[in-house]
Image 1 (cartoon, rainbow, N blue to C red):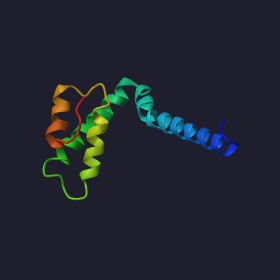
Image 2: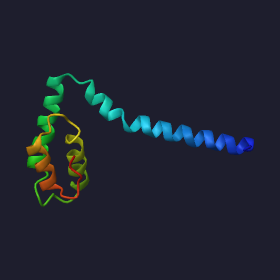
Image 3: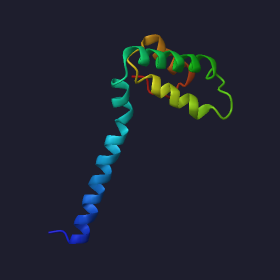
Length: 97
């Protein structure tokens, strides 16, 4: 039987894992609740940014922003094969679903 401090530690660790799991899905849940026209506008603006700002070579200091935008757009249902190809072409290390 674990001691009281060990049990508290285990419960805190489980709580932290649950919180991180819930937080990780927050963006996906928010995207699912957008109206289709809002999501489409978000897709269009993100894609335009990738096409204009994130062309290779990516300007110094914008690498992280471009990578985040590439990963973000992949979550949108509007991101079709051409969109995934754009992300793969601009940031080859990204995993394209």
